[in-house]
Image (cartoon, rainbow, N blue to C red; front, side):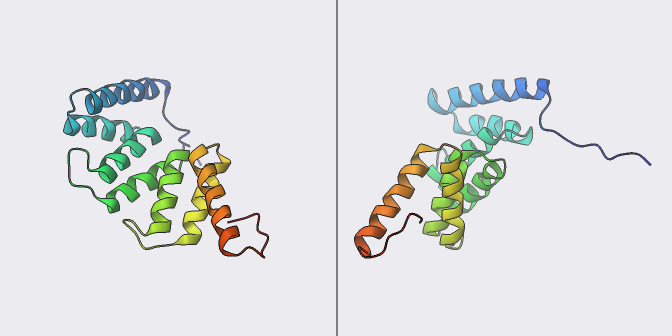
Length: 148
């Protein structure tokens, strides 16, 4: 009986290719901008396992960079990146859950993702959690709460 192979992420060659693709896509999306070519490069990098590329695709869909904005597709791509523990994607997907952007509102899932991003060192997530705590204290001054 043979053991199933375990994929441990991109190989060294794939990582080098991802770096090249990300650099070229970033340049194309800011300098020219040539969003369709940037999207193609980000897709190739995402297919190789890059959470940064999946996040960038989510950003392009959310912001409508070179296309009509699409929160459903943005949430999908943020989800792809968030599953790998990519903090900016966790943060953005959490906010989308809170606001019901591109998916059904789910405050519990949103807060869980934002907490996860904060735990991974994402400062905007930490700031948002603090803002939520302050808002809860203002609206409920008698209740002591350390958690949103």
